[in-house]
Amino acid sequence: MTQRHSSQRLTDLMRLLDEMGALHEKLMKLVDARSAAMRRADVQAMRTLLEQEKQLVQHIQQREGLRQQLLDLIGEEVGLGPHASRVMTASQLAQRLVEPQRSLLLSSAQKLQAIVARVARANGAAGTLARAVLDHLRCVFDAVTSGLDGTEAYAQRGLRPAPVQARILEVLG
Image 1: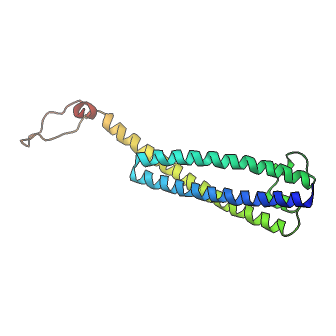
Image 2: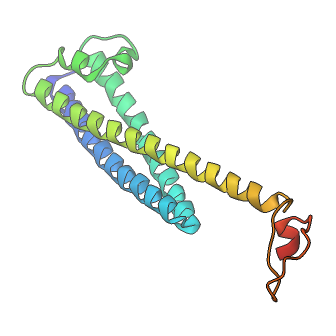
Image 3: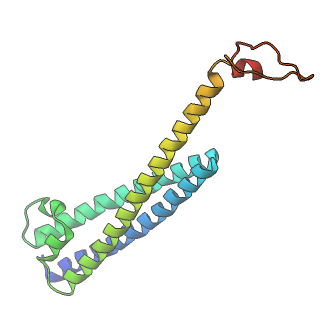
């Protein structure tokens, strides 16, 4: 391949990495919004945000496929075997390039790597929050479905009625 093709493919790769970074920024905002919705117990917002996340992740996966194709083409141009560039880090591939392409590739890759790490941390925190919410709801559900054994209540006149062995859901409907 000519230097012009190689240069164009590297330019395309760097643009793609920048685009993927922007997509991950959007994903970060959605993860943060979903965490806020969990804190508010806004089920509809959680559902909507999760659907938006799924669509965005699908788009990111499509862009990842294109990134791998570009890496294959660039790898062939710099003398690598089929698919060898897919398993290389950006710094390993950059070592095979000349300046300014080397620096530009490293800069784009580092920016993407940073936002991907932020998204992973935020998503981990959202997962922890979701598990805490589920644990809380499980405790609430257990309390609601357990019997009222040993509990006491007051009647309208202030008298203690005899304890009732009934489930709260049976009493409240």
